[in-house]
Length: 209
Image 1: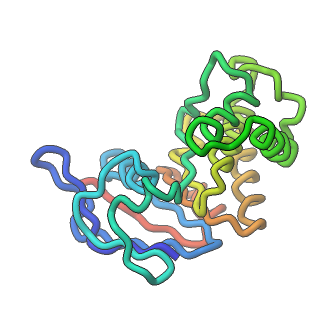
Image 2 (image 1 turned 90 degrees about the vertical axis):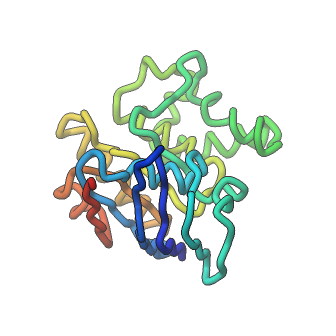
Image 3 (image 1 turned 45 degrees about the vertical axis):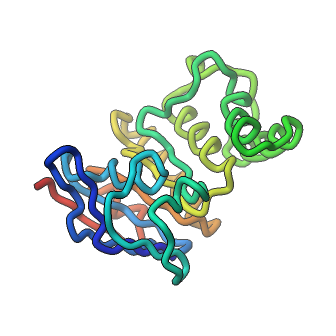
């Protein structure tokens, strides 16, 4: 379980998440819903260690930890809104780059793990393809597989249905529901309340100041 208490983040003179509390239950899917400007993506980036947390308390499994805890422990795997796949790398190489470069995993071990994830996500026939050859739904699954390569405790999605047509939206919904069945903790950032109600165990609404 992850508990955030009175989390705050500043951008110049603007402060967001003033006295913001959040509990993420292990094995549950939590959706944070709100309009643009409410700080939803910033929160996800803080949990991924991509933004600093300026003040507040963080508890992981009942123990208080430092605000740099996420950066040090890679607690959250980030699925970016625009996927951010490297266009010059194949699907396989996109997955193994970080584990080999940042975690010291051997290329052979990383490839074995990547191939297992791609098979699970129905992408075995895309291993040697480049991102430009993939559909939006396939890119979403590759981005998810890349996030899972670091064995995170939480998978975080930033607006996973943004700009997708209804068919791909349903595909992403099914993907999240499948992960839910495996017991993965998921945090979904979305503006789509209807989507959140279909996939989440709990919903938190945030509003811009």
